[in-house]
Image (cartoon, rainbow, N blue to C red; front, side):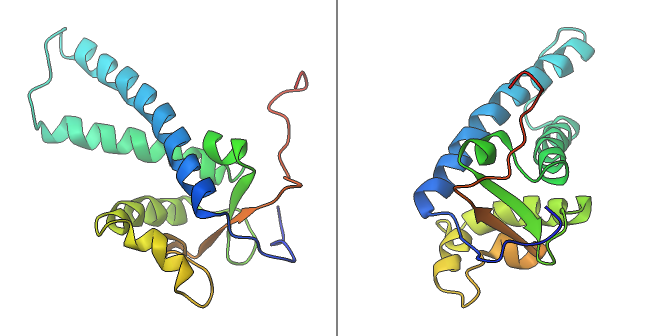
Length: 153
């Protein structure tokens, strides 16, 4: 994925929402596991409600989940399932900085009833707030550039 596609195809709203649901289900499982690890390190005692260190830990785990997939192959599991990938505006893989900006702005863009996501239909370059602020694009391709996860696939 060294060059952007000749014809840019933004995923449909349904496809975008399906990706979000897929990824949130996987993230929920990871956060449950992360919570179990935190409880184990806390001597088996429950973590106090609103503990800022625990919240920061869950935030970091969530960011690492998205950041790793975005910077290593350009696809989360949900994106892979729906044949969507992410790249920088110049066509290169996204950096950890871009992943961080994208992760933070995703929260902000959903606060006002998902306005940041709807913005892609109003902007002249078809980019959501998340895309614009992180200098990235997501692309749908029926002929996906997905490589098998292993040689057995």
